[in-house]
Length: 210
Image (cartoon, rainbow, N blue to C red; front, side, top):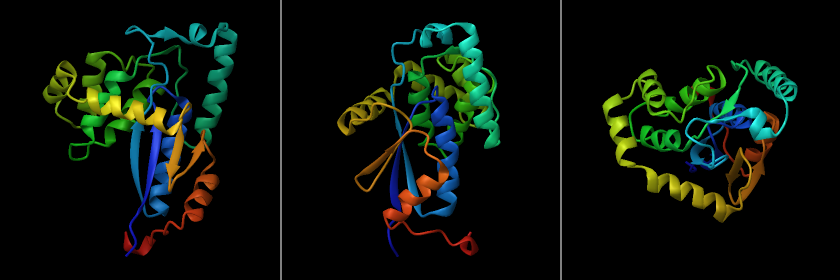
């Protein structure tokens, strides 16, 4: 039996294209024998704790921000993803560290959806410790342990390593998909990701075996 194809997914919780890409990778994992490894990426690492308005981030006015939100709502609706208009971007560093910890817990990968939803649906500051702990609770994980992870920065080195890998690979935008020494950049259509897997000889899953 062949080994699954390792697919590295470079992503950030405050990236709307990553929200779309993450959803497409879930579908891909149902169809193909792949092992998805999330690699956290520093999209806006300079963002202060209180966040920044999208007007400031994009250097534009409220009309342009509203247009961007309408565009994203349409794209999300096409894939049945909930989306609430954003007003700010937030610093995702602590969320990434908690997300890395969550991967070590049974069922912990559910937290990734919760972070995306907290930000893109509820417009919450996922850089705020109390908000992060709320998300941990919603994912069914241990809140006390999560606070300790944050206070002691237990997964700082792991996320530092992810950020360094982005530099080593030359990743400058997300989502980026890397497998078999090849990469795709951007929120690629599902069909493109499917062809990518086929080009690498990735085995399709047998639905009857599920």
